[in-house]
Image 1 (tube, chains in turn cyan, brown, green):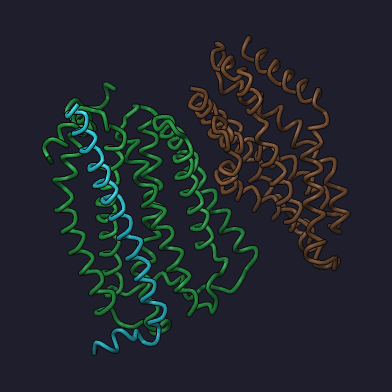
Image 2 (tube, rainbow over the protein chains, first blue to last red; image 1 turned 90 degrees about the vertical axis):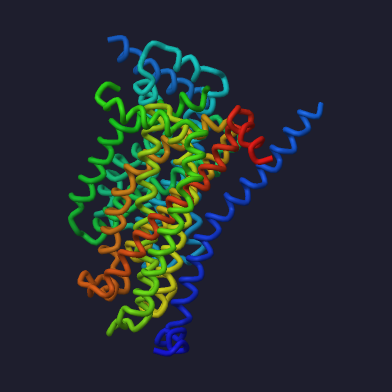
Amino acid sequence: MSWESFLYMGGYAVYVWPAYGVTACVLVVNIVLPVLQRKQLLRELTIKQKRSQAR
Amino acid sequence: MPIIRAFWAIIRRDLLLAFRRRAEMANPLFFFVLVVTLFPLAVGAQPNLLRAMAPGVIWVSALLAALLSLDGLFRSDFDDGSLEQMLLSPHALSILVLGKIIAHWLVTGLPLLLIAPLLAVFLGLPEQAMGTLWLTLILATPLLSLIGAIGVALTVGLRRGGMLLSLLVLPLYVPVLIFASGAVDRAASGLPVGAQLNILLAMLLSALVLVPLPTAAALKMSVN
Amino acid sequence: MSWIPAPVSRFFHRTSSPPYFYALADRFIPWLTIIFLLLLGAGLYGGLYLAPTDYQQGDSYRIIYIHVPAAWMSLFIYVLMAIMGGIALIWRMKLAEVMLISSAPIGAGFTFVALVTGSLWGKPMWGTWWVWDARLTSELILLFLYLGVISLYGAIEEKRAAARAVSILALVGVVNIPIIHYSVQWWNTLHQGPTVSKMDKPSIHVSMLVPLLLMAVAFKFYYLIAVLQAAKLELLKRETTSQWVKALLEKQA
């Protein structure tokens, strides 16, 4: 099976690939969002701690 | 038994309070009639269409009316602190809560029975379905009050819990809606409805037993 | 709790202490990610490439490899949430509260995926994007249940109280899910719409089944990774002033 016919999905590419795409987006967002938020929070907390130590 | 006396005292108190605010009692009823009136105006007045839609329209409206009246279940008691008194009382909170729910149903659910025949006439529901409509209302409106009580107990501490309440409660109303309107629909076509009524009865009985527990737990959470 | 063996309860007490759990999550996440990627790769390769084309549905059936596992996960996570809710209510275990609320967005995500892929699969099969099919309808109501949990938690300011509220709601929801499911099924047989017999094939060839199961297990591992990440965030948010967070910050600096 060639690469093109694989992507063509027997004519159903319009349905199959968006389905996989949406799934990938949701799965990635559910991991990336908490990780980014945690990094942000850690940064804020570090700044706060430094300030309280400086005083 | 003191607990039974407390149970009756709660019901008597709530009925008395509701009776003193008679004007408010009628509001869910007006709402019920109004929503049903909107449907012919929106979809047109073809008798066939209305007759086919009648069970669904009546039940969706009843559900919305019940939802609208739910907020009053614990709100005033929460605001004036009597809910806290109830939590402190030596009696089991779940029994007192059950009393409050029953009183609430007597005030907001039962009147829907009186107005239902009028709406059935409006929408051209066949006469043979009238008895079933009444039965489903008797069995299912208390279910709406019971299930709704959990949602109210969870949101009563919030200043703007109205929209959230409907989001929490409406999905749980789905089975009630399906079996109640399904029964009326079948009755309108002259089919037997025993199974649906039995299921509604079973749901009502289990809700009577089960609902007070999470409601009491949620109230404790909301008050503290 | 005398009926729980001492080593088990000791294990639970230790694991449920936030700093220990945080470190444990850090240690496990790389391994879980490797397993997940391996399973995902194998599942996708088997499902999209090796599995033969269905003689009735053509290649559109390949959506099954995400649709069905996502639908399984949506139910599985809700049940897990209810179990966590029970633990949180009975033993007042903070970690159970954290896991419960961390699971909700993931479960909602899987429910959403199941709905969208179901719709994308339905379009070529039924000719419309949406059919009031029993399974899609139940899935839609499940999505509302998830959204209710998420917004209730967001609405209550005090997070311990919010966690209690959400635990109660999850338990009420899990009792209702089977009732909703069967009522919707009954309703669907009553108002028979376009039939969906094409999707109700119970017999499925092994070459199609194996990738499906691989994907299902891969999604379970994905859930573990995602819930640990979310739980780490939630723990930090709750315990910003505690000693272990301060130690963690100093170690990072």
